[in-house]
Image 1 (cartoon, rainbow, N blue to C red):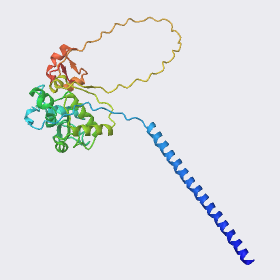
Image 2: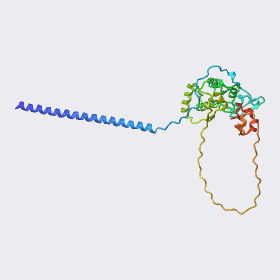
Image 3: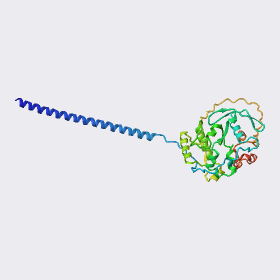
Image 4: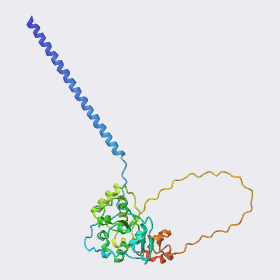
Length: 336
């Protein structure tokens, strides 16, 4: 009897163990399914978020570099090939002094021989203020040797002289702290940028290269493209001087910054007013518009101040003839 009971107990225990193992197996399978489902849901959600971010990201506003990429001309440069500083208008102030006059925030008083008395300047490269103009250098934004490497080796002596003494575009020559100008030497933006106003420097560099149809080497082009993006430069105003474009064999480029669209304003409604009683009126003489007399200017700065620039031969032959000496590149446009 005891043997039978023991056998039944053993059989019952085996059944219970079998049920327990099945329950554990079912639970583990259920747990695995839940984990798999959670991972699948998480992956799907992450993919959806990534796809949504890709779709809704705003497109970048690109500014295509309007310059020709070419290898530098590394031989033949001599500084003496670029005649400067000249006194183009024979007023005894050479190009260096003319730039200092243009950029002075407090104009110096001039005595005989273009001697400066007083004056105040701020260096664009570091923001330093000075009343001693001898601490300033006049920097060719695009250095003479860089211009040579980029195409000036093809120019005539007159073209090189006009470039070296360009007073018609205020971006070409800049009064800056002498030590920074010497630190810069003949480097392009791939290896040197000023401590201050970097983005303005980059924009102006591109403008002068466009103006004179100068090329860029590969390293310079890569640096400028990156800097244009990081500075968010979307437009530059510049145009190629035709004679330099012809010499370079490059199609002239014209870059114009977009003009802001004027916001329309509501027209006020006219309010009726009482008509006053008639009173004797005095007869007024019609005014005659005075025609501005053509004047000869000693510098482009003075012509700009008078509001007559650019002086275009085809538009005002008399004014152009009087100021022909200010047309340095002889393209029919003075003080462009």
